[in-house]
Image (cartoon, rainbow, N blue to C red; front, top):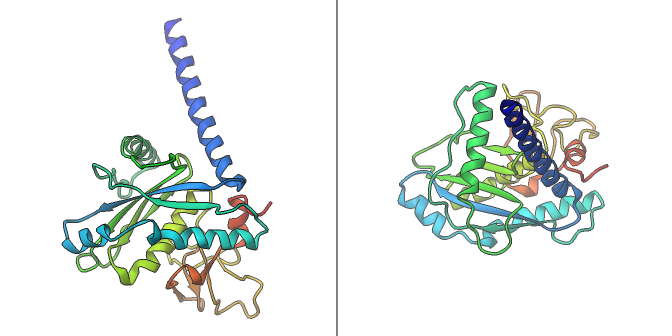
Amino acid sequence: MFRKFRILILLLALAGVAFAAWRAETRLTAWEHTVFVGLYPIAADNSPATAAYLAALDDDSFAEIGSWIDQEMQRYGGKVLQPVKVRLAPPPRSTPPLPPQGGSALDNMLWSLKLRWWASRNDDIPGPKPQVRLFVLYHDPANLSVLPHSTGLSKGQLGLIHAFASRRQHRQNAVVIAHELLHTYGATDKYDMRTLQPIFPDGYADPAQTPALPQRNAEIMAGRIPVNAQRADIPVGLGETVIGPQTAREIGLLK
C-alpha cells in the first residue's frame, strides 16, 4: 500500500512538472507580453582576452536581438510592444554541466535534468525573474577555431550556448543566440545535420523565390544562406536572417 502511495506521489510530481513546462511555453508563444531573457556570460577559458570581452558587455550589447525579434514579429502581424527584452546577468558562480558526447537518449535526458537543476541554483539577476535563461560560454578564438554545439531547450526554457569572445564576431554570436533562443520557444532546426545545408522549403528564407538559389538571407533555424546545392554561407549578422513561415508557426507567430 505504501509503495502504491509513493508511486502516486511521484506521478503527481511529474504531472506537475509537465504542466509547469507546458504553461511556461504557452506563455512564450502567446506573444501577449514582454518576455524577459536573462543572458549569463561565462568565461569558458582562462584567456585574458575572454575576461576583457566579458567585462565590456552590458544590456546594450544584446539589444539587437530584441529589435530583430520585434521586426520579425511585426512582419507576421504581431502588436505587442517589445516582445523580448534581453538583460545581462552576473556571471554564474560555477560552470554548467556539458552535454554528453555521443550519449544515448537517456544520457541526454539526464543531462537536461542536471542542467535544469544547475540553472535553478545559478540564476541570480536583478529585477524581474527571466522567463528564459541563456548561459553563454565565451571562448577566445585565438585558442579555439571551431565552437562546440550549442543547445536550446523548450522544456525549462534554457539555452547552453557557445560563442567567441571577439568584437569582430559579435554579430555572428547574436545569430547563434537568437537561434537557440527560438529553440526555447519550440522552434526546430531546419538544416541537414550531416551536411549543414538548409532543407528546402522550410529552411529557405524565401522558398517561393524563382530561381530558388541563391537565396539572399538565411532562415534563422537553418542558420545559413543557401547559395547552391553544395554551398551555404554563414550570415554576418541578424540583418541577413528571417523567421520563416514554418518557424513562425512553431513559435506561435503564425496561426
